Amino acid sequence: MSPQEFKNIWTNDSKPLSPLTLARLHRFSLSKPTIDFLTIAGLPTHAQPDLSFAKDVDDTFYGINKLTEQYHFLDKNSEFEKYIVIGSCRDGDAIAIDRDSEDQIVQLDHEDLFSPAYFNNSIEALADFLILFRDFESEVLKDKKPEENLQFFNFNNDQFDNLKKKMLISDSKAVTEKGFWKDELDILLSIRQECFGKK
Image (tube, rainbow, N blue to C red; front, side, top):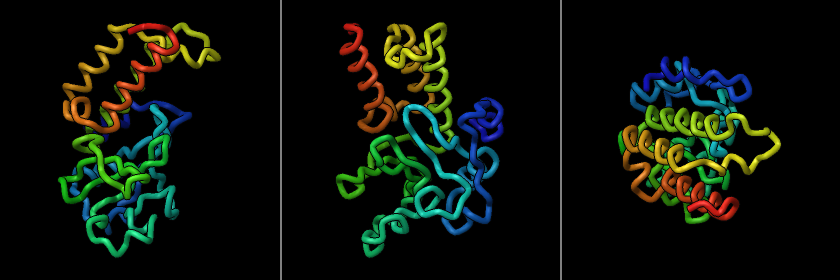
């Protein structure tokens, strides 16, 4: 998905996109496609499932920064220099660009010395997944009362299978390899079974 396509599709005033300035990105040695995406479209400040992304601000945790700048005790270990943090997950794990792996997106486990897990193969694929999950949520909650929060987990097999199929087409590794999105799909099924008895 191109940055302009993402910008056109992501029309959500309550979760706006936050493009970053070129001046803010020049020190990170990112690829041109990644820089183009972050400057033309950016990522939403918040997105489901409980993700937050960097804003165009001078802030160690709310802006885009190296992992070693957020956690100074890591700055003596060169293996962490490659991670540029662009957001965080609900549990506080960092979402980062791995400069040494062609700007692949990874999740860094803050409870396991920031060990990496697969997130997406590129920032474009990450944008695809945000749209797919948003559309899945909208479809599931259609005609349901807003106060019934757990109804998000009352999806049918066709809705789930359609989401997974589209994810596989966009970035199959994100669905088949242990990491954020595979875990998220497993969580959806687990909560659905617990709350609604659906297998």
